[in-house]
Length: 264
Ligand SMILES: Nc1nc2c(c(=O)[nH]1)N[C@H]1C(S)=C(S)[C@@H](COP(=O)(O)O)O[C@H]1N2
Ligand SMILES: [Mo]
Image 1 (spheres, protein in one colour):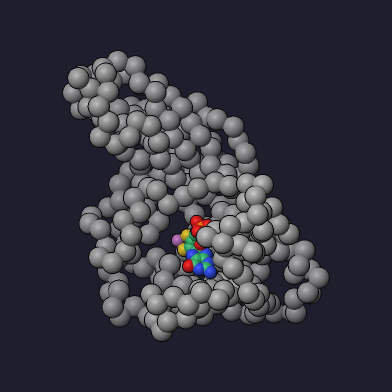
Image 2 (cartoon, rainbow, N blue to C red):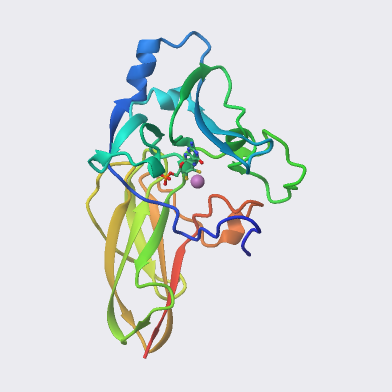
């Protein structure tokens, strides 16, 4: 594994949870009354991206089924405050359970249509290519369009590389389930995954919010690797290593969370 030239080295950091207020897109669509044969809802925004080929405004789409599910919002309040411009104010789409790219900010137009958006960020970027695909020649429509995300978890404390005193140490993290599922269990291991014990799960705020977890481990003197993995309510579990899901763009890497600590 290595960083991809020209791309942000996200690591496990590209996630957040917020409380959103807006109108359900389903209500808006029911008022608009989609025609027979409609199958996708496309969104467009005014910001032109130079990363796109050719340069074009940001856009994307979700299946009509998802758009009618009720949880997809046109939102203008985030955590009880007017939505700030950086997060898409005055109005953005929020598509819970899907990759962030489908939650179009500064929404300008909504189109109900019989095909997915042909916007660069739907048709070409954010697609999961097979390991042997050539990024230079893979055209629009290659591979899988990323939509709902898989079960994932990370360790929030201790930090990777932390120096601890030997003995008991608190370990905390978050877990987020795939699709509309819940987190069923979080396992923690300090012996490379040979044995596991279950963390205590925090408040369940619903299917699309992360769930915090906590446990206490014993840290011996020297170096210890702390591993965590989550299971969702469909018994899906995170894969052991990124090698098992390698793809040219490094997407959807939900392999076990690992941090290394040293106790002396
Ligand atoms: N108009 C517009 N919407 C957008 C984007 C963008 O570049 N332009 N980026 C998308 C991506 S890739 C993500 S991950 C989220 C980020 O939302 P945030 O800035 O609120 O964290 O916005 C999405 N919506
Ligand atoms: Mo993103």
